[in-house]
Image: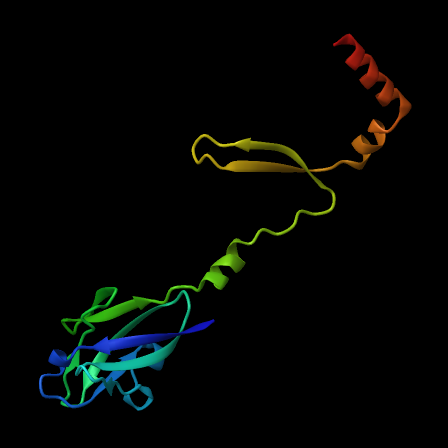
Length: 157
């Protein structure tokens, strides 16, 4: 799923330039496909891009005077081999609904029964152990012999 990400460049980063463009992995570093940053009332510039959730991208800003500048608030920076510059890095966070889809438990098959539910000391969380039910065990439990031995066992207690 794609997410709308806003990129901001402060006014002082332009130092005389009048336009800025957002280039990165998401538009193949192609200036013709680059969103133009729009000037804001406070002098900063902003642009938005639709980026895929959970993916990591490198990017930079290209000014109309030919200079490249980095995002002052990038999540990270990575050196570009042979160019002696750093690219900005962003990893697009996944939305809550996408995270929930990944963690939603699948229902147990029909022939599964809960064998044990216990609290693990490490996490304090309850862990449920499931085991496939055996048709032969279930059939044996319903026989008169099995019922008789259960009632005899109860009497001896």
